Image 1 (cartoon, helix red, strand yellow):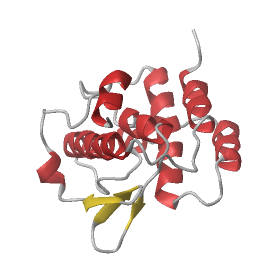
Image 2 (cartoon, rainbow, N blue to C red; image 1 turned 180 degrees about the vertical axis):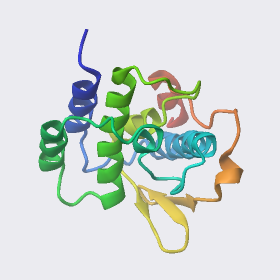
Image 3 (tube, rainbow, N blue to C red; image 1 turned 45 degrees about the vertical axis):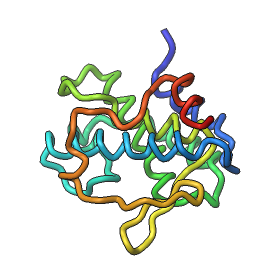
Length: 167
């Protein structure tokens, strides 16, 4: 069985961070799906910092990915990616370690999978001071946590369906 933390590292290091302009719709939908999942986790944990926060630390702050693995990822990510994107990459590692640890988790979807897919499709994101999230020049309001509390997914998690969104 492969190491789930190393699998996340491998996925992130394979990302072409220079961007792809032909997959904006699916990337924006994946960001909206992350916002939905983050809202569900934030509400369940009664956690501060939605939408971008260290969900693993909110569950169990003692379970962390190995420091050497985190350092290697941070050293190999491009220096120019947006700081919150960098944070989400590290938080995804900690979440993978949390899952591997056997810690009992709520029956909620993996919060970081939509972001990992979005990054793999070629883009990160930025935040502006007015509450908008920008994914490759496609901008939309972040909204409030309560606006994203729904059981209805905002994006498919199947590559073929994501590709169809971009046609």
